[in-house]
Image 1 (spheres, rainbow, N blue to C red):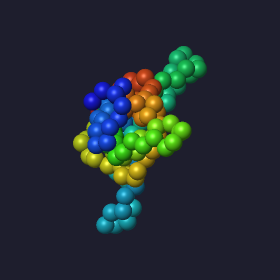
Image 2 (cartoon, rainbow, N blue to C red):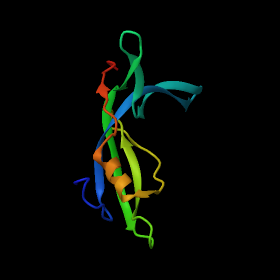
Image 3 (spheres, rainbow, N blue to C red):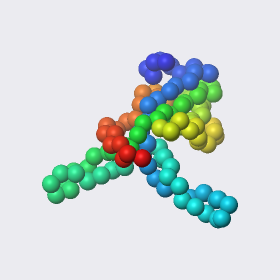
Image 4 (cartoon, one colour):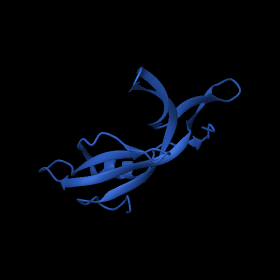
Length: 126
């Protein structure tokens, strides 16, 4: 679906999204244990000869799924988009809070157009 189009009720947007590797603590049979996991977003790393520059780095790519629940124009205020957001990790696991979110149409279009920062994907070999 074209991100420039006005979001309509029931529309689903699949957006390519960067992920970084992290360590998650989960409850196992013998108590808490740490496992490798994925976190949406990028890490900021110093680069350049003296570390004066930074770059955004991801360890893999997955997806963000935006589902439009409703679009509403409250009187003289900007049109609002009510939506839910989920992620699909590079391993294919689907996760995310399914709470209702709300933003303006312009902000939703920017979000549905893709990740806003330029990033490089560096595979960690995991």
